[in-house]
Amino acid sequence: MDRNPIIIESTATRLGTRAETDSQRVLKNTYLLLSASLLFSAATAGASMTYGWPYPGILVTLVMFYGLLFAIEKMRNSAWSVALVFALTGFMGLTLGPILSMYIRVLPHGSSIVMTSLGITGATFLSLSAYAVFSKKRFEFMASFLFVGSMIAFLLGLVAIFFHMEALSLAVSGMFALVSSGMILWQTGEIVNGGERNYVLATVSLYVSIYNLFLSLLRILGASDRR
Image (cartoon, rainbow, N blue to C red; front, top):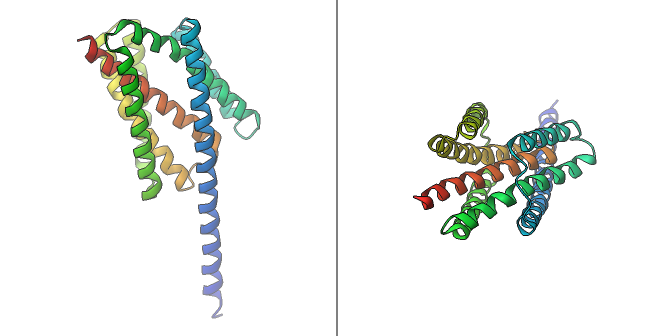
């Protein structure tokens, strides 16, 4: 009878250690795949800029983006999911190339704005990720706010695009910057605390947040430069 508490405590310790090891493995795999996909996305964006490939259009972009997201979700436990991640990030790089070319060509300080946006995005991601990893906090209370905020920003963004509302587009960019930053913090916290065990889905979530954050900063800084 006296050994039971020790046995229970030992079992709980082993389970806790195993859960922590699993979380570290998911975090490591996520960062490895995220790094590779970001490099691949940068390569396709560079190719798009070099060869002057046009932007595919908002409808084609949305269909491809959500189609690939759906495929990744369905195949998340298959080896094909990694290939689909590269298909998604490569395609998003292709859509990013023409946007970057336009900013560099049209704005007086286009190249500087692109590099500044990239630097702020990288610093934001590293800072938020480091805080989530070392604090080991779980930010699940943010999930509903982030979901609602992203949906509102998405719908308002479509209105701004189709009705050419520059002021609304700028406001949406600010919303996406905040939501994307929150998503990075929340997703990393989920990985660290074992709430997310699929590194493919975690990678896609972080990639989309980084992509949206970069574009939002690009629009905000670009609007400031035009003025």
